[in-house]
Length: 263
Image 1: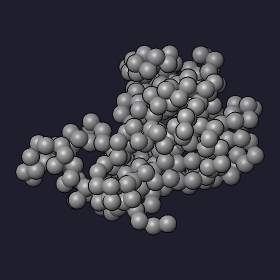
Image 2 (image 1 turned 180 degrees about the horizontal axis):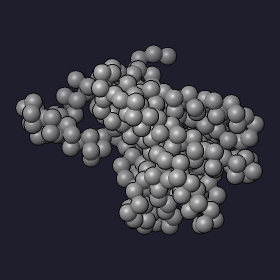
Image 3 (image 1 turned 90 degrees about the vertical axis):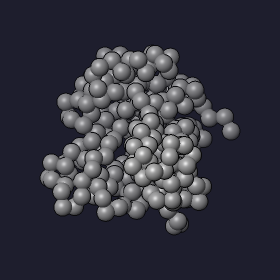
Image 4 (image 1 turned 45 degrees about the vertical axis):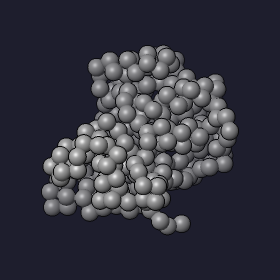
C-alpha cells in the first residue's frame, strides 16, 4: 500500500532529533510538507529541516504557554496552515512516589499534556475550516500498564491518551481524526547510551545484540524479542496521518511487540 500525504502540511513537535525526526522524514517521504520543531532555540530545527529538504522550521519551548504562542506566531508569519499535527514532544523524569514533588508532577503535565493541548487549540480551527485534519499524539504503553516508578510521568501520559478520546468526540463530523500511538521501549541513541553504561556495570559486554537481549529479558519482555525501531513508530504515525486511515479515530494504539497481552 502506497501511503500518500500529498498537498498536506505537517507539524511534528520535537522533530529535530530521534523518533520525531524519523516521523518527519517518513511524512516528507510520503509527500507532506513538513515543519520541523525544536524546543531549543538554537537553530537545530532549521538544521533538521535542511536535512529533510522540507524547508520549514519553528522553535520554542512548548512546555510553556509563551513558547507555544511563539511557535504559533512563527507558523502565522510563514503563512503555514497545518493539516497534520503530530504531538511527538514529551519527556520523562525520574522520581518515585516518595520523592516526586508537586513541581515534578506539574512539570510532567506541562510537558506531556498541555504542550499538546495548547497547540491543538491554536491549530484545529484551520483544520475545521478546510474540512480535513489529522492529530496524532505520542504516548506510551505505560498508559495501559503504568509502573510504580515515575508515577508522575505515567499519569501525564494517561491524561494525554484521555485527551485524545475527548478531542475525537469534540471534532465529530469535522473531517479531523485524533489518535494516540503508544510505543514500548524505542531504540534511540540516548537509550542505547544509557543501557551500554548499565551493561558495563553488570558485565553484559559491549555487543549491542546481547545487551538488547538482556533489556528484553529484564525490562521489556515481548514476543518479538527486541526493542521498537524509530522507523516502525514513524510508519504507524504516517499511516494514521494518511487518507487511508480516515476511519481510525479516537484510538490508543500500542506498538510494543505484544508486550501488553490483552484485548
